[in-house]
Amino acid sequence: MTILAFDWILLLEKFILIVVVIFGSLGIALYSTFAERKVAGILQDRPGPNRAGPFGLFQPFADGLKLIMKEEIIPTNSSKFLFVLGPILAMTAALMTSAVIPWGSKVHLFGRDISLQIADVNIGILYIFGVVSMGVYGIMIGGWASNNKFSLMAALRGASQAISYELAMGLSLIALLMLTGSLSLKTIVEQQMAPGHWWNIVYQPVGFLIFIICAFAECNRTPFDLPEAENELNFGYHQEYSSMKLGFYLFSEYVNMFISSVVMACLFFGGYDIPFVNEAALSPNTAATLGVLALLIKSFIFIFIFMWVRWTIPRFRYDQLMNLGWKTLVPLALINMLVTGAVILWRMGA
Amino acid sequence: MNGLSLFLDVNESAAVDYFPIAVQLIFAVGFVVTMIAVSAWAGPKRKTSDKLETFTSGIATHGDARQPMAVKYFLVAILFVLFDVEVIFFYPYAVNFRALGWDGFYAVLMFVAFFLAGFIYIIKKGALDWEG
Image 1 (cartoon, rainbow over the protein chains, first blue to last red):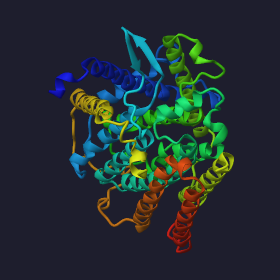
Image 2: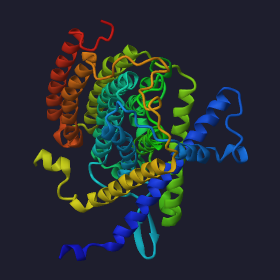
Image 3: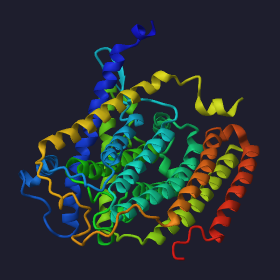
Image 4: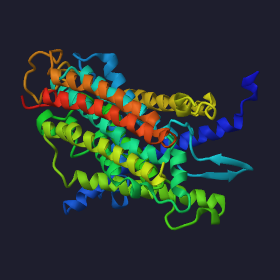
């Protein structure tokens, strides 16, 4: 009877962790929408939302409630089942990526060591790539099922943009994997925390640059927001959607932005490593709490960069976007991979 | 040493590592479906035939979107599948890279040369030109 031998307390603590991570990332995504409008306000020299609550802090809740209370429209010409499936897929894929992220080392509670990672699988990076590509189906199915020409064009653009940049993204990480020799995110973070070892950004600046550009494209953020180019496509792939189905499309973009910021912090900026502090000198619980905070602060900086870029740089034309992805980033990532490999082998003296 | 078993780290990994992911999937799907059901229940229901029409900024619709679309998107999708499979081949190499040494590097150099030959061919053929 293996089922009885199963560690039920482990299951409970994983479940609590899952609830905290999912609602945490939803909360951060909620406040990212607020931060986005505030950042836009500051960059454009205006106050931004400031009416709902002190400093407009209740604005995201007002927006969310409004979306829930709106009438649900399913157009007569649409494919009804796929129309509902689209946003469910997009949002589920966005919520699933957080499973392999190491949020912190481990805390010691009730006599147990609790790992702050939902699943430490040894193919973490491949898992993230797999789930992220599921998000493309959300866009594609939604745009196609709407049976609207604008939605369809936006969905096609979004899908081919996402797959084009996935190629360069996959290639840019290979140089990093040569350094780390592991696909597990936890191992990668721990290597960067080891004494005498710098963060991976020092060894892989070009890889990071390619990765962040691809992350912008994968999240459909400006300057790569072609699927949502309002002035050409009305509203984009979600233009037939209303109420919470629209809300989930908009929301999954912010969850994806948060998760890709965390992934960048883990891969290139030491994850939950606190700069200039020796974690081993602190008590485990303090170190873990500060580590989670450090990871969150790093990812908030990336989220700010996402927003800063959005309100600074105009959108690419479609052929420019495809040329950048295929003809610049892919060869650059290949060269980066070969140079990294040659340098490591040369230094090893093998 | 078998490259594939090294790549997957079979000895260290067990199905139990993936179990929390299944729990998370159930939780995430449950949350998303519940929220959509709640908003469908909470919102007003005053549907008219005009409201349920395809939205085209107030202009009368001409046919629907079930029409042939530009072949370029399909071309990009097929090329992506081709090149992504090649990229996936780099992953086991990158993980075992130190053990394979210079010999492995020369072999990968040859693979990159094949990769580039195909890449240059599709660019010369104009498969990625969006102007024409």
